[in-house]
Length: 374
Image (cartoon, rainbow, N blue to C red; front, side, top):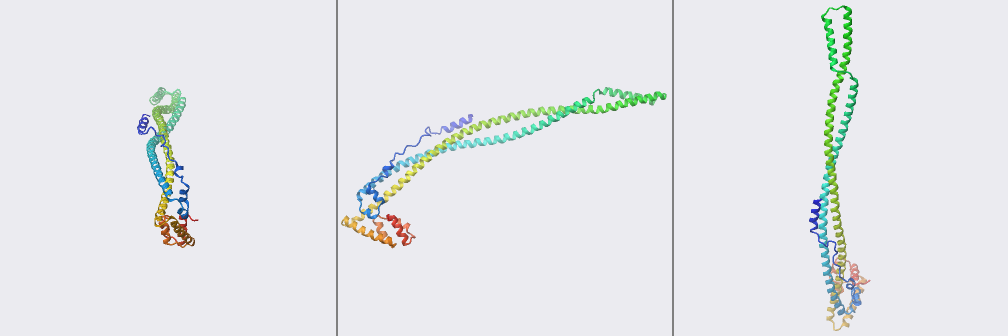
Protein backbone atom coordinates (compact mmCIF):
# COMPACT_ATOMS: atom_id res chain seq x y z
CA UNK A 1 0.00 0.00 0.00
CA UNK A 2 2.92 2.36 0.66
CA UNK A 3 4.07 1.89 -2.93
CA UNK A 4 0.58 2.78 -4.14
CA UNK A 5 0.51 5.97 -2.07
CA UNK A 6 3.96 6.98 -3.33
CA UNK A 7 2.97 6.32 -6.97
CA UNK A 8 -0.31 8.21 -6.60
CA UNK A 9 1.45 11.15 -4.98
CA UNK A 10 3.95 11.13 -7.84
CA UNK A 11 1.15 11.32 -10.40
CA UNK A 12 -1.07 13.75 -8.46
CA UNK A 13 1.81 16.22 -8.10
CA UNK A 14 1.68 16.61 -11.86
CA UNK A 15 -2.10 17.08 -12.02
CA UNK A 16 -3.56 20.57 -12.25
CA UNK A 17 -5.81 21.48 -9.36
CA UNK A 18 -8.58 22.41 -11.81
CA UNK A 19 -8.51 19.15 -13.78
CA UNK A 20 -12.32 18.99 -13.68
CA UNK A 21 -12.85 22.66 -14.68
CA UNK A 22 -14.55 23.14 -18.02
CA UNK A 23 -12.83 25.39 -20.60
CA UNK A 24 -14.12 28.96 -20.88
CA UNK A 25 -17.55 29.45 -22.39
CA UNK A 26 -17.62 30.42 -26.05
CA UNK A 27 -18.54 34.11 -26.02
CA UNK A 28 -19.80 34.16 -29.59
CA UNK A 29 -23.25 35.17 -30.79
CA UNK A 30 -23.80 32.84 -33.72
CA UNK A 31 -27.21 34.26 -34.41
CA UNK A 32 -25.73 37.76 -34.77
CA UNK A 33 -22.91 36.43 -36.96
CA UNK A 34 -25.31 34.75 -39.35
CA UNK A 35 -27.73 37.65 -39.44
CA UNK A 36 -27.65 39.91 -42.50
CA UNK A 37 -29.72 42.68 -43.97
CA UNK A 38 -32.38 41.79 -46.48
CA UNK A 39 -30.34 43.11 -49.41
CA UNK A 40 -27.18 41.29 -48.37
CA UNK A 41 -29.17 38.11 -47.95
CA UNK A 42 -30.41 38.58 -51.50
CA UNK A 43 -26.81 38.99 -52.65
CA UNK A 44 -26.06 35.57 -51.14
CA UNK A 45 -29.02 33.73 -52.62
CA UNK A 46 -30.27 35.65 -55.67
CA UNK A 47 -29.30 35.22 -59.28
CA UNK A 48 -27.19 37.66 -61.31
CA UNK A 49 -30.19 39.72 -62.49
CA UNK A 50 -31.17 40.54 -58.91
CA UNK A 51 -27.56 41.19 -57.89
CA UNK A 52 -27.20 43.90 -60.57
CA UNK A 53 -30.02 45.95 -59.01
CA UNK A 54 -28.83 45.80 -55.37
CA UNK A 55 -27.11 48.55 -53.37
CA UNK A 56 -23.54 47.43 -53.93
CA UNK A 57 -21.78 49.95 -51.67
CA UNK A 58 -24.07 49.23 -48.76
CA UNK A 59 -23.68 45.46 -49.19
CA UNK A 60 -19.89 45.68 -49.45
CA UNK A 61 -19.69 47.81 -46.31
CA UNK A 62 -21.82 45.31 -44.39
CA UNK A 63 -19.79 42.35 -45.65
CA UNK A 64 -16.48 44.01 -44.73
CA UNK A 65 -17.72 44.68 -41.20
CA UNK A 66 -18.98 41.12 -40.96
CA UNK A 67 -15.58 39.87 -42.12
CA UNK A 68 -13.94 41.65 -39.20
CA UNK A 69 -16.42 40.20 -36.70
CA UNK A 70 -15.95 36.73 -38.16
CA UNK A 71 -12.16 36.98 -37.85
CA UNK A 72 -12.47 38.03 -34.19
CA UNK A 73 -14.81 35.10 -33.60
CA UNK A 74 -12.31 32.82 -35.34
CA UNK A 75 -9.50 33.99 -33.07
CA UNK A 76 -11.64 33.35 -29.99
CA UNK A 77 -12.68 29.90 -31.21
CA UNK A 78 -9.14 28.92 -32.18
CA UNK A 79 -7.95 29.94 -28.69
CA UNK A 80 -10.72 27.89 -27.08
CA UNK A 81 -10.00 24.96 -29.40
CA UNK A 82 -6.28 25.06 -28.60
CA UNK A 83 -7.01 25.24 -24.86
CA UNK A 84 -9.32 22.22 -25.10
CA UNK A 85 -6.73 20.28 -27.10
CA UNK A 86 -4.13 21.13 -24.44
CA UNK A 87 -6.50 19.92 -21.71
CA UNK A 88 -7.18 16.71 -23.64
CA UNK A 89 -3.45 16.04 -23.93
CA UNK A 90 -2.95 16.62 -20.21
CA UNK A 91 -5.87 14.40 -19.23
CA UNK A 92 -4.74 11.69 -21.64
CA UNK A 93 -1.29 11.81 -20.05
CA UNK A 94 -2.79 11.31 -16.58
CA UNK A 95 -5.11 8.57 -17.88
CA UNK A 96 -2.25 6.78 -19.65
CA UNK A 97 -0.08 7.00 -16.53
CA UNK A 98 -2.80 5.39 -14.42
CA UNK A 99 -3.47 2.78 -17.11
CA UNK A 100 0.25 1.99 -17.12
CA UNK A 101 0.03 1.35 -13.37
CA UNK A 102 -3.04 -0.85 -13.96
CA UNK A 103 -1.11 -2.93 -16.52
CA UNK A 104 1.92 -3.24 -14.20
CA UNK A 105 -0.25 -4.42 -11.31
CA UNK A 106 -2.20 -6.77 -13.59
CA UNK A 107 1.13 -8.31 -14.62
CA UNK A 108 2.09 -8.82 -10.95
CA UNK A 109 -1.31 -10.39 -10.28
CA UNK A 110 -0.83 -12.82 -13.18
CA UNK A 111 2.61 -13.81 -11.84
CA UNK A 112 1.18 -14.36 -8.35
CA UNK A 113 -1.75 -16.32 -9.76
CA UNK A 114 0.69 -18.59 -11.61
CA UNK A 115 2.67 -19.05 -8.40
CA UNK A 116 -0.54 -19.65 -6.45
CA UNK A 117 -1.61 -22.32 -8.94
CA UNK A 118 1.78 -24.00 -8.71
CA UNK A 119 1.69 -24.05 -4.89
CA UNK A 120 -1.93 -25.22 -4.85
CA UNK A 121 -1.04 -28.12 -7.17
CA UNK A 122 1.88 -29.01 -4.89
CA UNK A 123 -0.40 -28.89 -1.81
CA UNK A 124 -3.03 -31.04 -3.53
CA UNK A 125 -0.38 -33.62 -4.52
CA UNK A 126 1.09 -33.70 -1.02
CA UNK A 127 -2.37 -34.01 0.56
CA UNK A 128 -3.02 -36.99 -1.68
CA UNK A 129 0.34 -38.43 -0.64
CA UNK A 130 -0.50 -37.76 3.01
CA UNK A 131 -3.84 -39.55 2.67
CA UNK A 132 -2.08 -42.55 1.14
CA UNK A 133 0.44 -42.59 4.03
CA UNK A 134 -2.37 -42.43 6.59
CA UNK A 135 -4.18 -45.24 4.83
CA UNK A 136 -0.97 -47.35 4.89
CA UNK A 137 -0.51 -46.51 8.60
CA UNK A 138 -4.06 -47.67 9.40
CA UNK A 139 -3.43 -50.91 7.52
CA UNK A 140 -0.18 -51.49 9.48
CA UNK A 141 -1.93 -50.86 12.81
CA UNK A 142 -4.71 -53.26 11.87
CA UNK A 143 -2.14 -55.90 10.87
CA UNK A 144 -0.21 -55.39 14.13
CA UNK A 145 -3.40 -55.88 16.15
CA UNK A 146 -4.11 -59.12 14.27
CA UNK A 147 -0.54 -60.41 14.76
CA UNK A 148 -0.64 -59.45 18.44
CA UNK A 149 -3.67 -61.66 18.95
CA UNK A 150 -2.15 -64.50 16.92
CA UNK A 151 1.16 -64.63 18.84
CA UNK A 152 -0.34 -64.20 22.28
CA UNK A 153 1.76 -66.15 24.83
CA UNK A 154 4.77 -66.36 22.52
CA UNK A 155 8.26 -65.60 23.79
CA UNK A 156 11.71 -66.47 22.55
CA UNK A 157 12.64 -67.75 26.02
CA UNK A 158 9.96 -70.43 25.89
CA UNK A 159 11.03 -71.34 22.38
CA UNK A 160 14.65 -71.69 23.47
CA UNK A 161 13.62 -73.78 26.49
CA UNK A 162 11.64 -76.19 24.26
CA UNK A 163 14.58 -76.46 21.87
CA UNK A 164 16.87 -77.24 24.81
CA UNK A 165 14.50 -79.95 26.05
CA UNK A 166 14.32 -81.53 22.59
CA UNK A 167 18.15 -81.51 22.29
CA UNK A 168 18.45 -83.02 25.73
CA UNK A 169 15.97 -85.84 24.97
CA UNK A 170 17.58 -86.51 21.60
CA UNK A 171 20.97 -86.70 23.36
CA UNK A 172 19.56 -89.32 25.76
CA UNK A 173 18.29 -91.41 22.86
CA UNK A 174 21.61 -91.15 21.08
CA UNK A 175 23.81 -91.72 24.12
CA UNK A 176 22.10 -94.15 26.44
CA UNK A 177 20.74 -97.64 25.95
CA UNK A 178 17.33 -97.28 27.55
CA UNK A 179 14.45 -99.78 27.80
CA UNK A 180 11.97 -99.77 24.94
CA UNK A 181 9.08 -98.53 27.06
CA UNK A 182 11.14 -95.53 28.28
CA UNK A 183 12.42 -94.88 24.77
CA UNK A 184 8.84 -94.84 23.54
CA UNK A 185 7.87 -92.23 26.15
CA UNK A 186 10.95 -90.14 25.25
CA UNK A 187 10.03 -90.24 21.54
CA UNK A 188 6.44 -89.23 22.30
CA UNK A 189 7.76 -86.37 24.42
CA UNK A 190 10.08 -85.23 21.63
CA UNK A 191 7.15 -85.33 19.16
CA UNK A 192 5.01 -83.34 21.55
CA UNK A 193 7.73 -80.77 22.07
CA UNK A 194 8.44 -80.67 18.32
CA UNK A 195 4.77 -79.94 17.65
CA UNK A 196 4.93 -77.16 20.20
CA UNK A 197 8.14 -75.84 18.61
CA UNK A 198 6.53 -75.85 15.16
CA UNK A 199 3.73 -73.59 16.43
CA UNK A 200 6.30 -71.36 18.10
CA UNK A 201 8.28 -71.05 14.83
CA UNK A 202 5.14 -69.84 13.01
CA UNK A 203 4.57 -67.31 15.77
CA UNK A 204 8.25 -66.32 15.62
CA UNK A 205 7.87 -65.42 11.93
CA UNK A 206 4.85 -63.31 12.77
CA UNK A 207 6.71 -61.82 15.71
CA UNK A 208 9.56 -60.86 13.38
CA UNK A 209 6.97 -59.48 10.87
CA UNK A 210 5.53 -57.44 13.72
CA UNK A 211 8.98 -55.96 14.33
CA UNK A 212 9.34 -54.99 10.70
CA UNK A 213 5.85 -53.48 10.69
CA UNK A 214 6.61 -51.44 13.80
CA UNK A 215 9.72 -50.02 12.10
CA UNK A 216 7.66 -49.21 9.00
CA UNK A 217 5.01 -47.59 11.21
CA UNK A 218 7.63 -45.36 12.82
CA UNK A 219 9.00 -44.42 9.42
CA UNK A 220 5.52 -43.56 8.20
CA UNK A 221 4.79 -41.50 11.30
CA UNK A 222 8.03 -39.54 10.79
CA UNK A 223 7.20 -38.98 7.11
CA UNK A 224 3.65 -37.89 7.94
CA UNK A 225 4.95 -35.47 10.54
CA UNK A 226 7.52 -33.99 8.14
CA UNK A 227 4.95 -33.73 5.34
CA UNK A 228 2.44 -32.02 7.62
CA UNK A 229 5.05 -29.45 8.63
CA UNK A 230 5.87 -28.83 4.97
CA UNK A 231 2.18 -28.46 4.15
CA UNK A 232 1.75 -25.91 6.93
CA UNK A 233 4.58 -23.82 5.44
CA UNK A 234 3.16 -24.03 1.90
CA UNK A 235 -0.40 -23.31 3.09
CA UNK A 236 0.88 -20.24 4.92
CA UNK A 237 2.69 -19.16 1.74
CA UNK A 238 -0.53 -19.72 -0.23
CA UNK A 239 -2.50 -17.54 2.21
CA UNK A 240 0.17 -14.85 1.96
CA UNK A 241 -0.05 -14.87 -1.86
CA UNK A 242 -3.86 -14.73 -1.75
CA UNK A 243 -3.63 -11.76 0.58
CA UNK A 244 -1.15 -10.04 -1.73
CA UNK A 245 -3.44 -10.66 -4.71
CA UNK A 246 -6.40 -9.16 -2.83
CA UNK A 247 -4.37 -6.04 -1.99
CA UNK A 248 -3.08 -5.76 -5.55
CA UNK A 249 -6.62 -6.05 -6.91
CA UNK A 250 -7.73 -3.22 -4.65
CA UNK A 251 -4.76 -1.18 -5.85
CA UNK A 252 -5.48 -2.05 -9.48
CA UNK A 253 -9.16 -1.10 -9.10
CA UNK A 254 -8.11 2.15 -7.45
CA UNK A 255 -5.87 3.11 -10.36
CA UNK A 256 -8.48 1.86 -12.83
CA UNK A 257 -11.08 4.20 -11.30
CA UNK A 258 -8.57 7.06 -11.55
CA UNK A 259 -7.89 6.20 -15.20
CA UNK A 260 -11.64 6.03 -15.90
CA UNK A 261 -12.12 9.38 -14.17
CA UNK A 262 -9.56 11.05 -16.44
CA UNK A 263 -10.90 9.18 -19.47
CA UNK A 264 -14.35 10.59 -18.76
CA UNK A 265 -12.81 14.06 -18.61
CA UNK A 266 -11.11 13.37 -21.96
CA UNK A 267 -14.48 12.30 -23.38
CA UNK A 268 -16.13 15.43 -22.00
CA UNK A 269 -13.44 17.66 -23.50
CA UNK A 270 -13.69 15.66 -26.73
CA UNK A 271 -17.40 16.45 -27.00
CA UNK A 272 -16.62 20.08 -26.26
CA UNK A 273 -13.95 20.03 -28.97
CA UNK A 274 -16.35 18.55 -31.52
CA UNK A 275 -18.83 21.30 -30.70
CA UNK A 276 -16.17 23.99 -31.18
CA UNK A 277 -15.02 22.38 -34.43
CA UNK A 278 -18.61 22.34 -35.70
CA UNK A 279 -18.88 26.08 -35.00
CA UNK A 280 -15.53 26.64 -36.72
CA UNK A 281 -16.81 24.74 -39.74
CA UNK A 282 -19.91 26.93 -39.82
CA UNK A 283 -17.77 30.05 -39.54
CA UNK A 284 -15.48 28.84 -42.33
CA UNK A 285 -18.51 28.27 -44.55
CA UNK A 286 -19.90 31.69 -43.56
CA UNK A 287 -16.52 33.34 -44.23
CA UNK A 288 -16.28 31.61 -47.60
CA UNK A 289 -19.80 32.78 -48.41
CA UNK A 290 -19.03 36.36 -47.32
CA UNK A 291 -15.71 36.49 -49.20
CA UNK A 292 -17.25 35.01 -52.32
CA UNK A 293 -20.19 37.43 -52.27
CA UNK A 294 -17.92 40.37 -51.47
CA UNK A 295 -15.66 39.51 -54.42
CA UNK A 296 -18.71 39.08 -56.61
CA UNK A 297 -20.09 42.50 -55.70
CA UNK A 298 -16.63 44.12 -55.88
CA UNK A 299 -16.06 42.82 -59.42
CA UNK A 300 -19.50 43.96 -60.41
CA UNK A 301 -18.72 47.38 -58.94
CA UNK A 302 -15.40 47.54 -60.77
CA UNK A 303 -17.06 46.81 -64.11
CA UNK A 304 -19.43 49.71 -63.62
CA UNK A 305 -16.51 52.13 -64.07
CA UNK A 306 -16.45 51.35 -67.78
CA UNK A 307 -19.96 52.73 -68.26
CA UNK A 308 -21.14 56.32 -68.33
CA UNK A 309 -24.13 55.69 -66.12
CA UNK A 310 -25.34 53.03 -63.76
CA UNK A 311 -28.51 52.57 -65.78
CA UNK A 312 -26.50 51.95 -68.94
CA UNK A 313 -24.43 49.36 -66.99
CA UNK A 314 -27.55 47.57 -65.80
CA UNK A 315 -29.06 47.47 -69.28
CA UNK A 316 -25.90 46.01 -70.84
CA UNK A 317 -25.42 43.43 -68.08
CA UNK A 318 -29.07 42.38 -67.96
CA UNK A 319 -29.20 42.05 -71.78
CA UNK A 320 -26.01 39.93 -71.77
CA UNK A 321 -27.33 37.80 -68.91
CA UNK A 322 -30.54 37.21 -70.86
CA UNK A 323 -28.52 36.00 -73.84
CA UNK A 324 -26.44 33.72 -71.64
CA UNK A 325 -29.53 32.31 -69.96
CA UNK A 326 -30.97 31.46 -73.36
CA UNK A 327 -27.72 29.75 -74.36
CA UNK A 328 -27.73 27.80 -71.07
CA UNK A 329 -31.24 26.56 -71.83
CA UNK A 330 -30.07 25.41 -75.30
CA UNK A 331 -26.81 23.95 -73.91
CA UNK A 332 -24.76 26.20 -76.19
CA UNK A 333 -22.64 28.08 -73.64
CA UNK A 334 -19.29 29.35 -75.02
CA UNK A 335 -16.01 30.56 -73.57
CA UNK A 336 -16.76 34.31 -74.02
CA UNK A 337 -19.92 33.76 -72.01
CA UNK A 338 -17.93 32.20 -69.18
CA UNK A 339 -15.37 34.98 -69.31
CA UNK A 340 -18.13 37.61 -69.04
CA UNK A 341 -19.64 35.87 -66.03
CA UNK A 342 -16.24 35.67 -64.35
CA UNK A 343 -15.29 39.28 -65.13
CA UNK A 344 -18.54 40.58 -63.68
CA UNK A 345 -18.22 38.44 -60.55
CA UNK A 346 -21.10 36.05 -61.23
CA UNK A 347 -18.70 33.07 -61.43
CA UNK A 348 -15.28 32.36 -59.97
CA UNK A 349 -12.38 30.98 -61.97
CA UNK A 350 -12.60 27.64 -60.17
CA UNK A 351 -15.51 26.90 -62.49
CA UNK A 352 -12.88 25.76 -65.00
CA UNK A 353 -11.90 22.90 -62.67
CA UNK A 354 -15.52 21.75 -62.51
CA UNK A 355 -16.06 21.84 -66.28
CA UNK A 356 -12.68 20.51 -67.47
CA UNK A 357 -14.16 17.34 -68.95
CA UNK A 358 -17.80 18.42 -69.31
CA UNK A 359 -19.95 18.19 -72.40
CA UNK A 360 -21.72 21.41 -73.51
CA UNK A 361 -24.92 20.18 -71.86
CA UNK A 362 -23.11 19.38 -68.61
CA UNK A 363 -21.33 22.73 -68.75
CA UNK A 364 -24.64 24.56 -69.12
CA UNK A 365 -26.17 22.63 -66.22
CA UNK A 366 -23.23 23.32 -63.87
CA UNK A 367 -23.10 27.02 -64.74
CA UNK A 368 -26.88 27.24 -64.17
CA UNK A 369 -26.38 25.73 -60.71
CA UNK A 370 -23.59 28.20 -59.92
CA UNK A 371 -25.78 31.15 -61.01
CA UNK A 372 -28.77 29.93 -59.05
CA UNK A 373 -30.96 29.25 -62.08
CA UNK A 374 -33.54 26.53 -61.60
